Amino acid sequence: MKFDIRRYLFGIIIFVLGAAATLMLFLPGLIDVNAEVTYTGSQVVFGSQLVDLGVLGTVQIEPSALGIIAFLLPALAGLIAIFTRKGAFVSAAMFIAAAIMLFLIPTYTQTSITLLGNTSVYETTWSMGGGLIAAAVLSIIGAVVSLYVFLISLKSERQV
Picture 1 (cartoon, rainbow, N blue to C red):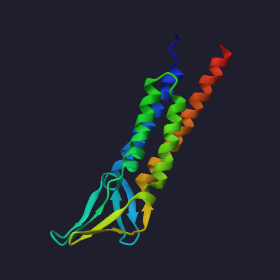
Picture 2: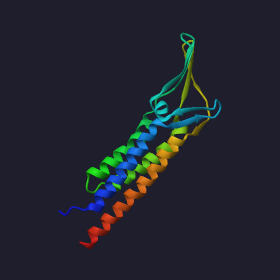
Picture 3: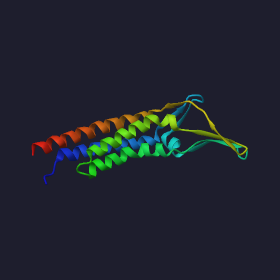
Picture 4: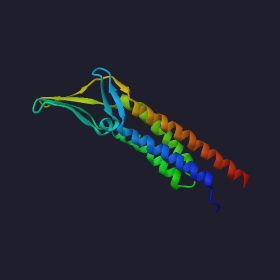
């Protein structure tokens, strides 16, 4: 088994892209167009209390399992690419799924309002923030690089 420096370097590049996409969780993720307020990716996916009026009520962003998965998939894809020999195709599929889920975060993020014990969904218009866009773009780049590595490995297997 020969050490392939090219595969190792591409694995590092894919890992860095995945880690960078996941770290975008701490940058602006969504913008409430109506109130002109920006929320970080972590506030959006883990949930955040926006207004607390004590016993009268609260306004909060609900936690989102899909959002958490969307931000964790790129890091997992990077780890798979670096630690498995033939993981480039799986890594590419995970990056593609993450990019799609990241672009859909504004559609499945819900805000709820609780007034005197009655909870209802608060409809708001979300716009994507810079961190969310950067995470999606990094995921797309990670998918392209992973597919390139996969195609290189297919070509090298045919030549053997």
